[in-house]
Image (tube, rainbow, N blue to C red; front, side):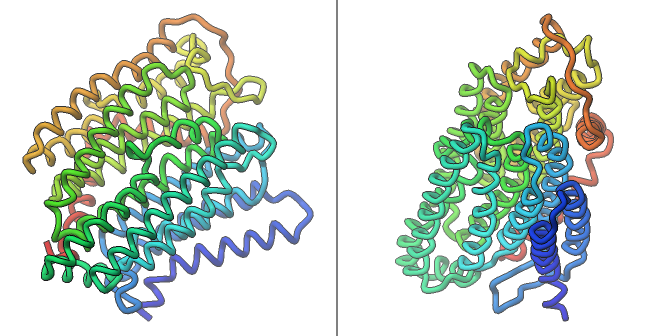
Length: 478
């Protein structure tokens, strides 16, 4: 029964997704709104089941649950719920209101839950592909739109490449370590120098495959194009739940099976983090589309979160988890504002289209300004604390130069965040955005409230992240 309750959330998500898929196929009426609402309820119930699931390792070491996986799973569910809440009005306005959208989100989340709790390379790959197959379809969901089709094709080709690299890395690790189980790999690397040297080559391919999915540099070439071309409701999902899931997996893989060779991969992670922060800061400066700007912004944010991984300590893991949680809220709030940018039911995406918003819609301008200030890391907003925790962990781990680079790139990135605020408050432009839906307003308001009020009560998130980090490091023998 313990095993059943552990896998119950996955069974619940998969069965609910299949029931909704069949109901949509075998009924003539359009039930897309009802299925979307039901999907949100299903995700909320699944999150509750994930929190209540007993901890431990099941299926002979293939699947593991603890406080770390629960923390990441809840973030994934929140990201999916927020993206679905934002999708209803937007999908209707651009003519892609189909019941398959929330069903694909449910199947993607199912893969993410498997991914986060994987304790074997085979389980990891199965979860990876379940998630990816659904995301490929979502990227090209607006089939009548050339940009969406292009985005879907680019994401599929590069995603398939990353899957191939990941699988090749897994095969190398298995060849040298003689096992695909996380605990077995850690034991082999700690006790056999030959296995450690050979498996390190496989580790590089595994790291590259996962870096593709979180759009870390230099494997970020798909991000701006997919962010811009995919429907904004899809982009909002891409920017939140999948990144959380893959980053959580990255923490488990690097500090679990490859923990004994921390000294061999730490420099590589530092290079990826540094490149991500630099490209994210510089690449967005000349962007005129706010969606492309958010694409480059996400690259930079993954670089900051990778500083926590590079630290290789419990404080680093806790800092990365705090950063991811805050980034999730900031992204949902920002994409809520982007989805609200429509005139005549047609989306507008240029930064220049925000001109005059401070006088025309002061509440909209305030929420977007709060999101931009927070992403820039300006105190006392939540984004400042996210950066503070990862910078502190990096400095305490002896990675001072990386932290200094993070501060420098934060200052550079502040330019394009503040440019958005400047356009809203100081430029004159065409007023009159369409009326926002209740779902969009709710997401925007909740994100703004969290971002502003976090300073008054950060202990809840910091306590939960510390517990999650302790669970991860303890389970891996640190």
